[in-house]
Amino acid sequence: MHAKREKWANNFSEWFNEVIETAGILDVRYPVKGLYVWLPYGFKIRRLVTELIREILYRYDHEEVLFPILIPETEFAKEAQHIKGFEDQVYWVTHGGLDELNVKLVLRPTSETAFYPMFALWIRSHADMPLKIFQIGSVFRYETKHTRPLIRLREITTFKEAHTAHASYEDAERQVKEAIAIYKEFFDRLAIPYSICRRPDWDKFPGAEYTVAFDTIFPDGRTLQIATVHNLAQNFSKTFEITFENIKGEQEYAYQTCYGISDRVIASLIALHGDDRGLILVPEVSPIQVVIVPIWYKDKKEEITERCFEIKEKLEKIGIRAHVDDREKIRPGAKFYEWELKGIPVRIEIGPKDFEENTITVCRRDTLEKIRINADELEKIKDIFAEIYKNLKNRAHEEFNKRISFVDDIEEAKKCIKEKKVVRAFWCGEEECGKEIEDKVEASLLGILLEGSRSAEGMKCVNCKKEAKYEIQIARTY
Ligand code: P5A
Ligand code: ZN
Image (cartoon, rainbow, N blue to C red; front, top):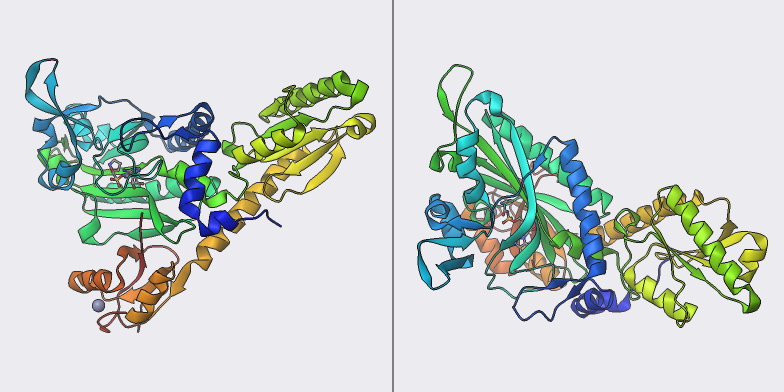
């Protein structure tokens, strides 16, 4: 059982823009295009999401650092592919006050060229590796495609980037797998479904040997890239002179990887679980997990309020973030509406009958079901959290799977894309044919499916009908 999702399904873009404002996530009126203000409630969600990725990265032995936002042109321009990929997207700092700078500075669009000159200083021998560090902060990209809050930003304020260095190619490969495992756990805990693809060579990260991407599917049928993992091989270590003494005592260039996520994770959290009433937050990242609303009745007002605070304290003792909404002039109905819009997973109501009988009325945000439980059985709320999580996850996965069409004909692929589906098909692996597919179906080839793909053995390419090598995913993207 679920609440209505009509607007969410049929008018997603409007639903999304409305909800991030009304729920108090962002103020989109900031007077620079592509830049937005995090509001207190949105910021709390952001903090819990960044804490979650931190917790996982720390567990996988990553250490946190913070680099400057400015990068000198001389470093930024060193790696040829990298600068080619980013030159039309960077903001330049050309002046300090009235003086023109001798060396122009870029506002980092990503931080390879900030980290790697330092890696060259820090890494001496194989014993210094693996080096695994990350930072969370802002990067700037002068996006020319239509900007959207949380989705396509010019200041990406929640850019989590990890950078690693290794003593062998094999160890860098192992790191790519570890990064994939990290993001899988992260998205699983947020109940965000994804596919994992190796991007075609013409769409890899500038300077990478190859790129692996996580994509989710939004309610309008378009995919959103929510994480990328890049094997940089020795491309950057050669330009930045990151060398180490290997076991044989010879100098060798380090092997590197990097991987990142952004505010798009929060966009997905909002987009994939919401309904017509607003957000529905996964309990783990909900700033308030239980909101308690007193239902005042005549002379029982004070006792009921007192009971609410007792329950709040008991909930906090067992590790649940709880809040009592005892605002005087607002009716319970209006309070329910507001907390539903904000996505609080569980609401507790305490009315006169609950007060008399030592019970609480529990209402789930995902199903809107109401049950009464004994006020001494608050541990049960944790089971309800687990059920909400499971329910949100199942629903999001069903939606995701419903969106995917398996196709073996190019016309059929085109038709499916028009019907807002994500297409899976077989491909020969030839670049020319892949680009032809993109032109014909007017969508992007997201790449070779790395997980959950069907065997290509004996299959024909969807376009050229030659022997197929891989299963690919094709979609319209954000
Ligand atoms: C990996 C981290 C990098 O920048 N360098 C360090 C590598 N990869 S990336 O694919 O270019 O970006 C990482 C992720 O950031 C998200 N992203 C964006 N989010 C919001 N607004 C944008 N303009 C934007 N651009 C990229 C994507 O999820 C991407 O995978
Ligand atoms: Zn082909």
